[in-house]
Every structure is written in C-alpha cells, then in structure tokens.
Length: 589
Ligand code: GTP
Ligand code: SPV
Ligand code: MN
Image 1 (tube, rainbow, N blue to C red):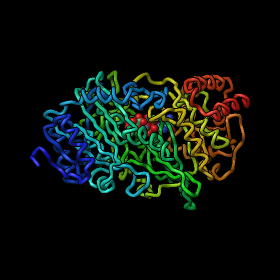
Image 2: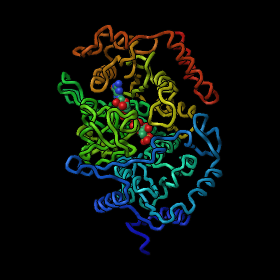
Image 3: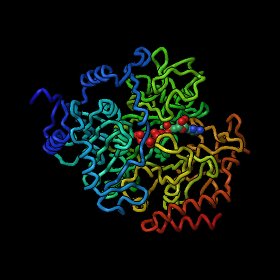
Image 4: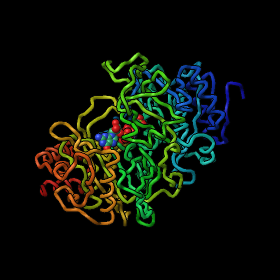
C-alpha cells in the first residue's frame, strides 16, 4: 500500500472493488478509509481548522464546537436538481424529476471524472439504524469533502461498526459525492434505486450531501420498503411517559422546517407533573408491522441536523443543551466572544457580530445575521431527553401517527381520522406552506403528501397504495391525527401558543388512542372544549379554542379543489379508496 492510502480497509471485496473503480474515475491525490475512532476525529477537526473549513468556537463555552460557512449559493436542498432514475418515468412518477439511468450515469461520471485531482477521497462506512435491527442498512459514502465526513460522523453510526454489520455481504448503498466547483448549474442529486446507488455532485448542504439522510434513508429507503413490506417516513418519533410510568410512542410527519425537531424534544408545561417526553428521533422513521399486529419503529439516524433560527431556551431547551458541545454549526452568526447567534435566540441581539457570510453585522443591518436555514449538527446522545430505546434493535410500538402542515388558515389545530384509510387520505392530501429548507419561493401552499413530496423514491400513487397495504397487515394500527400549530387570527398572530404547550394536544391524542373524549365532525374526531386541557394558558380561552378548531366550510371546499389537482396529477395510480374518501368529506361538509 502506498502512502497515498491511510485508514483501515475492510475485507469486503465488493466494497474494495467499487472504491477502486471510483479512485480510477476521480483520480484523488490521497485516499482515507474512515474508522470512526476518536484519534481520527481529532486529526480531522485539526485539519479542517487548518484548511479554513471550520472555525473553532469558544472552547470554554462550547467544547468541541465549530462554525462552518457554506458557499452562499449552497444553503438548502435543491428539489429542482434531485432525480429518481428508475428504468421508466412512470415508476418515478409525476412528483419526481426523472432521467433514464444510462443517461444520468454518463452525465455524472463525466462530471466526476478527474474531479478529485489534488484532493483527498474519503471512504465513509456508515450504518443507518441500531446494530442488529432487521431494518438497519449499511452505506458507503465516498466524498471529497471533509465537512461532509465530519457531519456524517455525527449523523450516523460511522466507522468499524458498519463494516462489522456488513461482513462479506454485497448489500450496501453506494454513495458518491463530489464537490466539483460549486456551480449551481452542475448540481445533481441522483438516485438509482434499482442499483442501490446515489450520486450527488456540486453541493455540500445536508440533505444534498449527507447521503445517509434524505437520499439513502428516505428516497432509496422508501423504494426498498415498498418491496420489503416496511416504511421509510419523514417522521419524528417520541415517547410520552405518564405519571404512572406508562409509555406511549407517537410518530409525526411534518414537512421540512415545520416542527419535528421541536415536537420530538418537547418539555411539558409545569402543570404536567410527572409527564415526560423522550426523543427517539427527530426527522426519519423506519417502521414495520410485526406479528403482534402493531407498527414498530426505529430512528435510523444518530444525530440531529436541526434548524437553528428560532431555537432558544424558551422554545427548545433540550436542543439548546444538545448543542452545548461537539456540534457543527453551519451558516449561523459568530459573536465577539466566539459564540454563535441566530434570530430567535434568547435575549436581545448582540450589538455586533459576524453574519453567516462573514460580514460585520449590527441590529440595524437589513439582512438576518444567520441564514434562515442555518443548521446545527449535534450527536443525539447530547439530548437530555434521549429515549432509552434509541439503540433497541426491536424498535418501539407506535400508537399514534400525526400529520402536521404549516397553514395560516382553514386547517384546525387538531382532529383525528375515523380509521386507517381516512388517515391515509388525510396524510396524502396534506397541504403546507413552503419553507427555507428548500430552494425556491417560501410561504406557498403546496401538497406535501405525508411530508414526503421531496423524499419519496417512487410513484406517489404507488406510495399511497403501500400505506393501504401496510394498514391491512395491522390488527392494532396506530390511530391517525392531523395537527396545525400555525393557524393565525385575522391580525396574523398565531392562535395557538405551540412548542411546550403542544403537550396539551398530545395529551388529547393519547386519550383518543385509549378511546376517550371527542366528538364526530365533518373532518374527523375533534376534542370538545371539555376534552382538552386549556386551563392556565395565557391569552387562550374557550373563544380562542373555538376559533382554532373552527371548520371553515368555504375554505375546505377550496382545499378539496386543491386536492383535486394532486389527484389529477396521479390519476393513473391513485388508489380509488382515497378518491372515495374525498367524496365523503365533500358530502359531510
Ligand atoms: P427539518 O429539519 O427541516 O425537517 O425541520 P423540522 O420539521 O424538524 O422543524 P423544526 O422543529 O426545526 O422547526 C422549524 C421552525 O418551526 C422553527 O423556526 C421553529 O421555531 C418553528 N416551530 C416549531 N414548532 C412550532 C410551534 O409549535 N409553533 C410555532 N409557531 N412555531 C414552531
Ligand atoms: C429537511 O429539509 O427536511 C431537513 C434538512 O431535515 S435536510 O437534511 O437538509 O433535508
Ligand atoms: Mn427533515
């Protein structure tokens, strides 16, 4: 072995052969096989600081924490450059960009060719899911970005643990990530589900470049899940512990930047003595039906890639603890004492700081100091509310599934589906306002079925069918709910206080899982005012309750028309059960 190589090679021949092929293609100056050790970590952080990739923060205040500033043209997911390259266009479906696999391979191999000359190629073995879980999957990401390596180290179980899990098997996800020259015109996130392969070029941003996350765990995962009877979902998982010590697990699909991380780390209000929320996961759930007729879930990740703005001691104290150490911050502001700052953090803004682009910033500046989609990457083990079940290969049994969009109007705070098929319809037709997590206009209502519009690796109509099929395997299915933390009054103010107070909604949801307290409406089961605890909420009374739960018939008719658009788009694959559900709502209204 020449001194071009460092690190620990596995014995797996398929891995060696594939990496060899990529080395020949990309022609790196050096190759490093990551082992995931502490020594390797220390060396890599030192090197990243040397290269100016990371800025060390005040190590007394935030030990092991660093700031990264991205290329300003590379700050969010790029749905327009994301492709599902199945054999036929129909298989990818009308909600995905599609290109023929041969054509896309050719285009991307051409871009990748010689692209690592003078650079280091890192081989990153990683495991999604706890070791020993039947759903856990190994991936190998090849990248020429040290920033990506250090993020993958936090977000996944990285290193030897993955080789141990893989053994001699050929079943692993092949991921190739090339920085290229960061030209948005040469930016592609391409998935080849039939080959279990991902190629991503021209972006270093989380969902585009940390291939274990959205690419592998959701797009490839959902494709495999359909073949193998499991589900890959854009969902948080939490456990609710009652004062009697009973634990109930809940999964929630909210679109990007719509509150999953916050909800998964919720701290109940003071009056909820003895109640405790445990975080299993904040972004992705893999779920499968077991013999007991229930749906079980794991979190395949090992860290949080969370939205920084709005994170504070008052909104999310658990996240604030989690980012105290060993965290990478991306595109936040840097204060004079070497700490981080962003809009919505506690206290007044700093008198001056350095903004996410590296410029001097004062409260008078016209632009925000932190990018609206600035992020923290923190190990999940840093979260004081981490669930004891997070490494359990058996997963946790899910009692409730919650869908939640971001809607200023029309959609009530909470309601419950009548049964599974109605619940699938609620998820399938969910609308939400677009956010800074993806490139493009913000605040537009679009259909985001199950919060999976950007992440479903195959035809959305078939995906709905898969949900119905899984339902048939469940003799004790989770109850399904819809929430909207974001409804506003006529003055544009949030009607519901949200964050920790969402415990009150969660409490009703748990009650409903045990069959108590609600009334049937045109939309589904709803709490009556006596069914939900609204006592002690400043500025919130019975009148507000009726406002936030109000069924706006005219608004809903428009909503049903917007759903029609999705149904037309998917006309050749949409399960007729869902078309029928829509008719039922119309007649009930
Ligand atoms: P991704 O990581 O992009 O998938 O986002 P997420 O779904 O985990 O969203 P997150 O919890 O990071 O919240 C996104 C934004 O919504 C933040 O600015 C939060 O402050 C805000 N938010 C979260 N929960 C609530 C809530 O209950 N009420 C209100 N008004 N805002 C909330
Ligand atoms: C999202 O956009 O849903 C995220 C952030 O969770 S990313 O990993 O970039 O997709
Ligand atoms: Mn997400």
